[in-house]
Image (cartoon, rainbow, N blue to C red; front, side):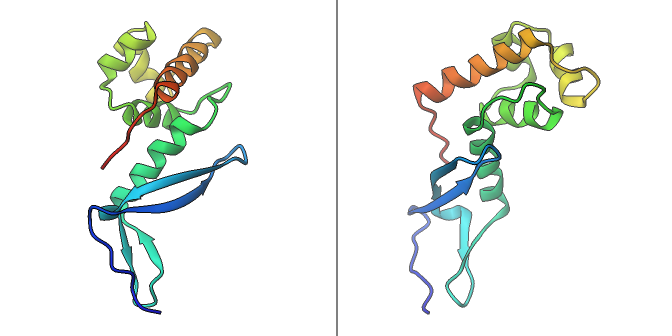
Length: 129
C-alpha cells in the first residue's frame, strides 16, 4: 500500500468512540497525523490533545466530574482558570481546588458546568489546530 499524499492543510476523517458508547465523526487537521510505511495513520501528540478536547466537550457531563475532566473542559474551551471561574460564577480558588482534586463539585456547579459546555457546543465550536 502506498502512503497517501496528504497536504498539511488537508483534513483527515476519523471516528472516535466516547465513554458513553456514542461514536463521533471528527475531521483532524492534516498536521496532526502521520503515516507509516504501510500507509497506516498515526496520530501525533498534538493530535491526541485535539481529540481529548473534542471528547471532553462531546461527552455528557458526569454527575461527579473528575479533576482531569474539569481541566480538560476548561482547556478545550480555551479558557484560563480566571475566565472559567467567571463563566461558572465561582472563584478562581474553587476552580483550582476542583482541578487539583481537593474539592468535588456540588450539584449546582455540575449543572453550571454542563450548561456552559452545552452553550459552547450547541453554538458550534471550531477546534482548528
